[in-house]
Length: 157
Image (cartoon, rainbow, N blue to C red; front, side, top):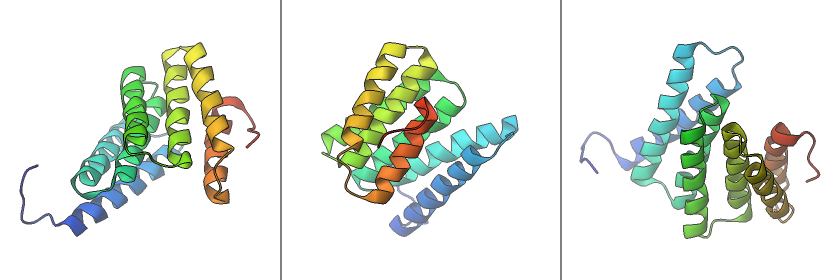
């Protein structure tokens, strides 16, 4: 970690959250220009960097998830696979809850889909659905269901 007296833990948190939200805005934007695709990649990585300085494991996993989502949206298999696997590794290492674990499998399903690995994509999609059935929070279940529907049509969660 590089010490910088000007970047306080609170500033890291604010930057991480703002960059995460900016990444989402760009993901949701139809017809992004190539410069906006580049900005989206950089914003996702910058958000994860700032969470890495001050965030708990759940923020690190969600940052990796978002980076994987960005790369899958751009059709870039290798970095999608890498960051989706990092997300799953963090979820496992830190015993994160069902929502994050299901999202990690959703990211891996998406990543393997982009890479053309249909068997692995199907396996991770099934695992995401299985774990998703145990999510107690209704809003979290809805979020996961929406993401899974992107992959396979309507979900049964």
